[in-house]
Length: 442
Image (cartoon, rainbow, N blue to C red; front, side):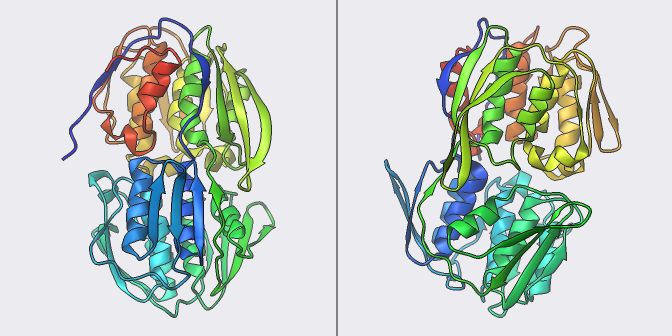
């Protein structure tokens, strides 16, 4: 059993400074391994996030028959082809990664064998029905614990029925699972999303040679279509820096006076940059430099300086483009002048923890005034001493890193009950922050 790693974080004694790079984008890393395993030929991947979540995906694809190796130059995947994965000899353990579990469910649904999937205590408590209910329409069978939770047995089918599905709630994971199932289905797979969600799956499918049609829906949202069965051709991948990981040093730099940092090579997919838009609305001294295209994705360097932030009203339709960044945004709002309202956060209730409730608890424990109205969070803004509390992270890496950011700008030290699982998505986080001058002492 993994040991806990409590941490006490005090205010940084100086502004953060320097150039840095954050780990590769986790969403793209997961997808590059899965699609390369389904491709015909050999794919080279550079910049892959080598955190535990992604390594679990690599192990799962190996167990399904792909040959995957790595060295100092990157990762090499010898694909099996769509529909050609092999029945795994053992249980697939996805660790803490809901993304990996849900996306892989789509792939396994359209392969004619039985597999069993599990995860750590946090993942075993998270709902899977949002994926398994629509995927059952392919002809696959899913057997879960009560509440649709892992461990889960999947009996796939080699004659998958293509799905036509409208997402009840915007979710890139559910959309992606259905599209991945459609790769080996007989006919046209259609997904309609009421609000555009991150489109890494669509971009990467095109990169591997799949025709994906995207059209706007009347009244908003998008319709995504592909026809199976299809073939994927091996293509090399360069993984950009993860904008969700960049959020933590970025917000810390904005909150700590005198900071001046550059985060290089960050992914700027328009469906992932809601946080950057919001921070600019708050008055952040943030510029995007050296914009370019790498591996089919927009990339640039984030230049951030210490800033005086003001409260903001974030519309609900922005949530899909920044769903993982709300905890650290809420921290920024606690230090801002004036109140902020973060709208439409129902998706946060089904993350690694009930991330909405845990974010509220994180702020309240450290002196911030917060209210919840339905799925909206209202943060009053700075009105007194912040810090001095104990943060319970519930095995949620983003809560832990958000608490670190809060502590670096706080009036009193912040105690965090556990930070061990930060390594699942952001290996070397504390070292990176200290290299910028944070002064965090383990």
